[in-house]
Every structure is written in structure tokens, then in C-alpha cells.
Amino acid sequence: MNLSSLYDKALDFGFLTVEEGMELFEHAPLTDLMNIADSLRRRQVPHGKVTWQIDRNVNTTNVCVANCKFCNFYRIPGHPEAYIT
Image 1: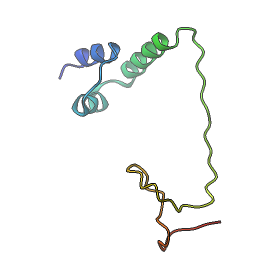
Image 2 (image 1 turned 90 degrees about the vertical axis):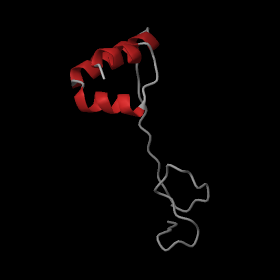
Image 3 (image 1 turned 180 degrees about the horizontal axis):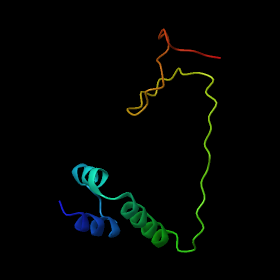
Image 4 (image 1 turned 60 degrees about the vertical axis):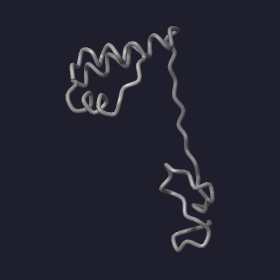
């Protein structure tokens, strides 16, 4: 894969495949990725004001029944590692 063509695809807001993302992760210089990210940010936020939010959650329990596919924190009711504070 040609890094330059992957850079162009990203700069056109194209979706990268997993393989393309791995190519960038393994071979692209970090400074190139930072410059591309900054360029995309400047186009999406032309006024230049960028903020962030610190998200802190105090979990009083790890018991949940939602069964989210991404969560490795929760335990089902009755599980030996379940807790309620």
C-alpha cells in the first residue's frame, strides 16, 4: 500500500479499511499522522476552538443486564464477581 494514497483518502474523509489502518499504524511516521489529523480538525472546526470533557463515572455496581458487546466491566446478577456498594 502507498502511504501517500492512504493520506489522500483520509484527507478526503474516506473510510479506511482495517488493513489500511494497520498499514498507517505500522508504517506511517507519527508526525505525518498528527499533521493529517490536525488538517482534518481544522476543516471540521474552522473557528479553531476545540475542547474536551473529562468523563468520570462512579460505579456503585457492576451488575448490568444490557449485555453490551463492547463492555468487559459488567457482571450479570448473581455472578460471583458482581458487587453493589
